[in-house]
Length: 376
Image 1: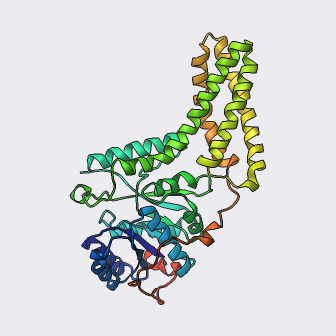
Image 2: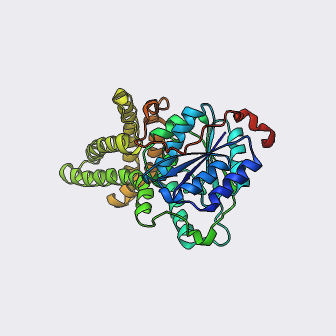
Image 3: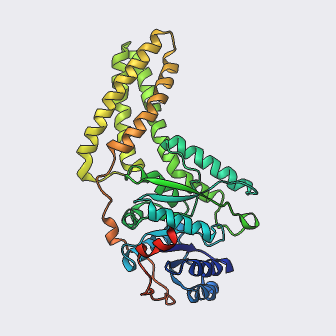
């Protein structure tokens, strides 16, 4: 099993983490990705290498997402068949929690394992607020409850690495993209509680509150905005057609045809990213079946509510909010669900070079099966 640590301008806590991991579980292989920290940090990375880690990286800072992909690609090529646990280098993840996530990953039978913080005790206000907003938005957009959407302590089975390399994102948004794409890829998520650690109010974090928050929330906004855009088109179309035809049935069908076409294109290419040409007909057929079912449901809801004296606009909002959750779940699990993990990762070649200080992989590191003695 690989412990992958992306690192940008670290301090002595990185070396301490490597030493503690090697002491607690010497059968694990620690891989550090230097995310372009610069020459002034070369001595610290050399010390980490002497402590037992493989140190790889590149010259220019490219972001956490890129560093993780670089490490995944290295692990896939140099340690085939090994699962990967990712941890941060700033002291927020204890050795005990890293090993607990590794143990859960070993026992999870192919799930993505998250180490979720409880955010108890003294937690910086921006961290507590940011995670609360992210957690609520994620649940609203996907219907999935995750305690800590921003955790950097995660475990991935070996057969997930190809998929990980194909998920979009180069910086902090990458890890949220993984969660957003996991269900459509048929990946199960397991979460265990870990200790909440913030040293010096998280002063060592390289997270930029405004720029990186926009990056992180962009995927969620895509999820939500797709439905909102379709709702606006559908609502406006419904009102216009009803004013012209005075027929509720014609208005519902006409407005839904236009909004459904727009929604299909947005969801396929931007939200669920199922945009391969070979599956257009399959996805379109599934979506048409769903759209017809939604049209029928929408008409029944509107007919009943309008008959009860509810204004058309109010009835429209009520019925569509109810149908939104159903529609999203069906699209994610059935309409745009890919048949298999993409194979494009085979050609993944980051535009970066391995620094000359890279160490040679240890040849006597046991495979993941050798970890069982401390997992019991």
